[in-house]
Image (cartoon, rainbow, N blue to C red):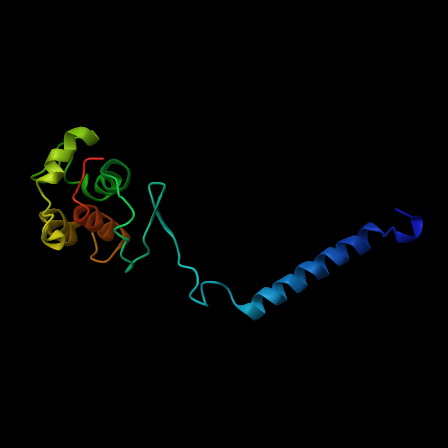
Length: 146
């Protein structure tokens, strides 16, 4: 670069700051994607993005018992339903062993009436929450052992 085009470090920093400030002004004039309704907050459950509260997970997304449902059951239900807990159904901590127990608590014809969800609402889940909707959608999809 020719000597006449070189700028001092303080001038370079000033130019960088003014450029960043201009970018921020441009973005603030447009609004952020959340305020425009173009973006939704993500809820991550055990590394999997779950639906935000009140949003129903589309049936097109195949949910997995081991990846999506079981981690919710472990975090929300195992306090009472594992080991010496007082719950009538026990989670062993082994996905394959616990699937038949969980499957017996679902009603694929009427997912919202599944014992897993009805009991879950009174004890650990909130109707309409991301966890509730994930489990309900898994039941709607047939409650597969996948």
